[in-house]
Image 1 (cartoon, helix red, strand yellow):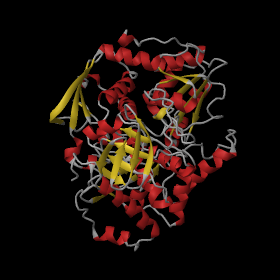
Image 2: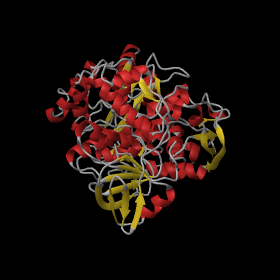
Image 3: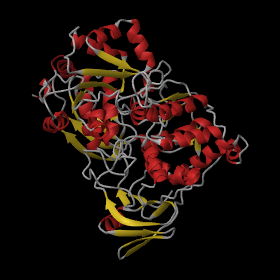
Image 4: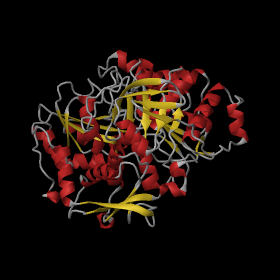
Length: 563
């Protein structure tokens, strides 16, 4: 294993530029504009900063697995950072840099510095990087390659590396081996299924990668589902989506289907009938799905970046590291939660968001929640919001999730979330104009139970003339909602249900052109929405979303259980 006190050259190359030290981790997807390189995450302390051409330092990335696609897009467009420097392990941005170098000849050095050296470089103004060293102003730090464990490849792995299974499998295995080495994996492991997040059209780079792999003959070898995409695949033309966006987004989805992926187009694959079971080793991408699979289902998957997901699906193999290993599933932080009496569904996205902030770089154990009795949808909201603010691939909830008993490591640090913390967090996410234009539900994709609950909250009331409401959901959920009458009830109230795309990939004109203020029950979308849409996005209860739809307004206020 690599020495934690050694400055490591994870991905080599030469670069120089001004140092931009970020005070906290960043999700490249939803946090960085791939066309300009500027930080668009309005909640990030360095919102508006330009990463292009800078030697960018951050502890590690966080949030979406799609960040690798943004890094590749920046590299192909000439807007990438000069180099990326981390102090902790990092996979998502690193994978984007690996693919840029491996498949497209674009160099983007990636370094990992020990905390003391990272702090020294963070305080400097300019850095120059070679294969052997980083020179930051007057400080020179030697760089070494990760020593890691010797990677124990099976005969089948070696055959794929030699090209015996075709050029696509060879390329996929080269990328897997590179990521296994930088993650100090001892071996690769079989997976029973995969889930592709790279089918979302974050920009031309995603399409370039997919079509390049297809041209090499890529075909999946394990059952593989597809994440939400960027258009309603069958209706985008009728919806008025410009061909310049709709055509490449549809081409991207089609490429993955031709490579053998199942056209599920949902960011909540755990809602499908064939969800994985406890102990299953799987190769999933999409941050909320990874966290739900590990935490709630007890399956095992790392938080695989986009592009690595296809490499896993094409080979059936993944680096044996992170949450695949018992020791890496332990909780390194214990968070005691002051559970409010009468807390409803809105509590869980708030809790996930704050728990991620309290544990941005390690798996937590949440305590004090056993009597809450959360539903599957509550845990879905918890996991999605947690994945927005934390880089950790899972969490434990004492008395609720399957591996929580004894999950805390002996040296786990401790903190708490009080009622005051919850109230402050709610005010932060709920604040905004009283007049509302749009209700946004389904991030992650709504379940049938959530659709029924919204229909019940509306109780047949009609939408206000100035309002719109959209629920994004998987195809199977929409079919079930149509079969049991829920879809008809929602339509009476003016609610539209849309398949295939999710709020984090929805664009105008499907996103109503005149909308300025949005309410949502999603902690994930409350975070990403402002940067993605340019709108004010407020976290709200389901009842407040219903009130907003029928009246056109809802004041910023605490839920009853926090009042």
